[in-house]
Each structure stands twice: as C-alpha cells, then as structure tokens.
Amino acid sequence: MVRLSLLSLPFLYSITALAAPSVPSLKLKKYVDALPLEFNFNPVISAYWTGLPHHRRTPFAVSADGKTGFLAYLDASGTDVHLQHIDMRTMKEKGRTVTIPNVKEAGGLVAQSHGFALLGNEAIPSSVANAPPGGTPVPAIYRYQNGKQQWKTFVAGPGVHADDGLSMAPDMNGDLVYSEKSGLYGAYFVVTDYTGFAEGHFGDSIQYVDDSGKLKTIEGASSAWGCSHNTGIAFEAADEPPYASICAEDQGAIWLNSKTLGMSNTGVKISNENTTNGGSGEPMGGMSGSYSALARFTNSDSYIFAWVSRGAVDLSGNDWMGEGYTHSLPRTEGRRTAIAILSDKYTKVGPQATSQVGAANGDSQVNWVAPTGGDSNNAHVAVFDDTYALVTWEEIANPSCDFVAMGCSGAFSGTYFQLVNKAGKMIGKPLKSMDTYVAGDMVTMPDGRICWPYVNMAWKLDGPVDGGSAKKMSFACMSLA
Ligand SMILES: *[C@@H]1O[C@H](CO)[C@@H](O)[C@H](O)[C@H]1NC(C)=O
Image (cartoon, rainbow, N blue to C red; front, side, top):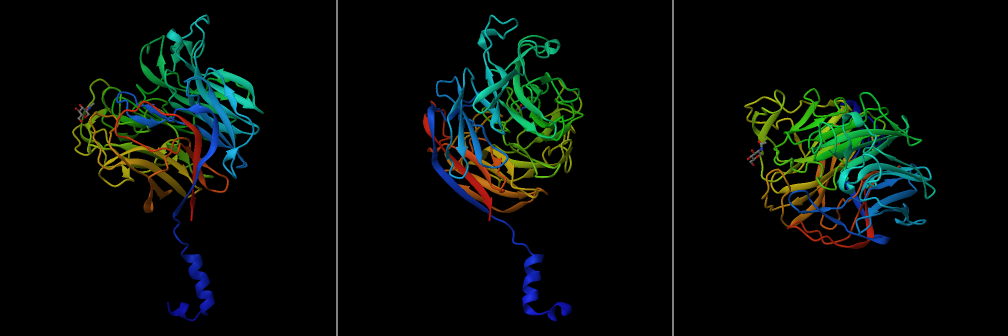
C-alpha cells in the first residue's frame, strides 16, 4: 500500500483496471419470428409415459465461419425433415429449403463447408432382408453438399453389428457430433433390438462414420448395446474416438461412459437417480431431448455436463445388478438443475456418486445450479469460450409431480439462464425470460455468442396437449456483457 501510494494517479487507475477485470454478465437478444418456414411444423411432442408437453427438437448448427446457420425440422405430417439455411447476420432465410424424404425425426445436425450432416431415422422396406418389423425406423446419417445428397449411411438395422443383435429406433433420441481432427462422425442414440440377446429391450448404441460415409467399427469406441433403457444421452466430440459420452439408465445412475461405452460400474458414476418404469426423471430432457447437455470448453480437454435431478437419499442395494449399483429415493419432489465438470472425457472433477448401500445421502457430490423448490426441466449447456459456460432450464414454480421418476406439470414460470465458470462456480444471479425457450441446439458462434432456435408461442406445462402448428422460427443469442 505504501509503495502504491507513491505511484501517479493515472498509472494507479490503469493497474486497477488490469488487476480486477469486471465479472461478466449475460445479455439476451431475440430474433422473434425471424425465419419463415416453408412447411408447417409441430413444435410440441408428448413425453414418454406422462404425455406432458416437451419442445420438439429443431436441430441447429452454424458453419465454422459463423455466416450460415442450418435448421432442421420435422414436417407437421410426421414424415420428411426440412433443412433451412439461415443468414446469421439477420437470422433470415438464405437459399432454398432442402427436404430429406421419408425421415421420421431430426436427431442431430453438424454444419460443414457447403453443407451439413443430419442424424435421422427412416423405415426400411420389408422386402429388404432382416428389415425391422412393422416399418419401425432405423437411424441413419445423411450427408448433403450444395443441396445434394452425397451419401446416406444406416448406423443400425440390417447388417450392422448382426452378431450382437440388430437395432432399430422407434424414437430418434440421440445426437450427432463431428471431429475435424479425426474426420469421424459419431452418433449416440437410443435403440430397441429386434434380434439377438437384447431382443425386445431398449438400450443405446454408439457408431462412427468417416467422411466418405463408411461405417467404421472402432474397438473401444463403437458400441452395439450399452445402457439399459437409456432415457437420456449427452454426447460431445473429442479429438479422437471414443468421443465423450454420458448415459442415463433405468437401474439408478447416470454414467460417464466414454471408456466403458455402457453402464459398467467401472465407469464414472456421475449421479444416483431414482428410477421407475424405465424413467429416471428425464435428466437430459427425455423425449426430444439429449442435445446440448455436454459441451467442451474452447481449446480445452475440459467438458461441462448439465442435467436435472431429484437428488438421491436412502441408498439400497440393487440385487439384479449387484455390487456398485444402487437404488435410491428422491430427495425432492421436483427436479433441480445440476452440473458436473470433467477435466477430460474420462474424468469427473470431484468425487463420484456413492454406491454405498445404506448411505443416507446419495447426492452429496452434486453441484446444484438451481435454487431449491419448484421443478426444473429442459436443462441445457453451451460454452462461451475457454472459461465461461451458459446453463439453462425451464421452471415450474408450483409443480404437481404425480408420476414417479418422470416429469411434473404446472404453470411455466420462466426460462432461466445461469453463467458458470470452468471451475463449476455460479457467476451472478440467473437471468429469467418468460418468452424465450430452448428448443434446439445451443451453438457457440465464432464471435463467442451462444445462439439457439425456439418457437414464439405461449408455453404451457400444465398438462398434455394435442400439439400445435408453427410456420416461423425464432432465435435467441446470449452474449457476455
Ligand atoms: C423411486 O422412488 C419411489 C418413491 O418416490 C419408490 O417407490 C421407488 O421404489 C423408487 N425406485 C427405486 C428403484 O428404488
């Protein structure tokens, strides 16, 4: 202090500015109804088991130069996925709509030079040997360049890991990522097997496809069947396979399974979750979720994962699975948003969730984001840069939670946006919006903004709805101020 007081005043000001950079805050900008759609879109999908409304996912991706956005949406008829190009300066349409025929759901999108790759699903004609029964769709990756299809590669169905049983995907719940360094697309998706040891069971699969559209079976990275009755996927690219993966299963846990590819207890147990009837509280969004749940910090090996949880108390043994697996009771009626930081794709910062039978607290490792009370759903995360990330969720302040381990209902009371840092610390108070939702991938722009699509509509979480119709898409972008 004494030494400092000898310095001249202007110099003092400048070192103060350097030494204490102001803590950033969030700034939201909306582009309401900016993008007219050529076809009708139904923005609401009914959730598994409860029938409660979820936003129907509209996958979104942006070219590396930040100029062109790509938005995918399912035609209101339930067949055909449309791809709309967007001028990212104005959020208005650019070029013609590309339609991928016969696709039943848009499940993940990667923007590339002069085009895109989409994860979708479509029925295989029964005349094809070993096609799934009843025209059940099979997931595929579709690569387009300059509006034309370059290739289409099925990542399940006839001929794909036949020895382990054949898979199909009645719902397209999963995600598609791409690593420039490895030149490989990775897809992680929920499946049902229709032959083999897991016939009739829900599980999940991880598959890799190279730039030419060739399906690659990679030891230690590809997986025919991993987490039982997976109800949520978090997936993000790494520089080489295996990519970073997280699954929610029906036995009582969320696993970081980049190494195990399944639900082995040698994986990292991120959390204990109460489960019933294959549900575990829709941790990664449930139906039409499983995107923007895991994000990699810029120029870093570190990742951030966001989910919603009821917490876990009174751990009991899981006799069916054996040691390392537990059942638990929920701590709270509603769900709260939580985050976990990974120092790399295999490693969680801080302790794992306990597997100690009899433990009263099964959630002491959880880093809670949202305040107590109410119910949180539709949690997502994206990074701004190498230090800061944005966590978001929707809230029902006074929920009715009538279903065990599923979603709650009640009046929508706001979308929240919380700034967090790489150490998992909350920065400032969350920003709240009553008319902005997250209904598609949250994309980090080259200029550091995070942008995502949504439909401008009155959002109701009170009870099941019959769907709806939209012909315009809105966008929102968050920046650091
Ligand atoms: C989940 O919690 C409910 C009570 O809310 C309980 O009845 C059920 O047994 C729990 N599930 C498991 C697998 O322990």
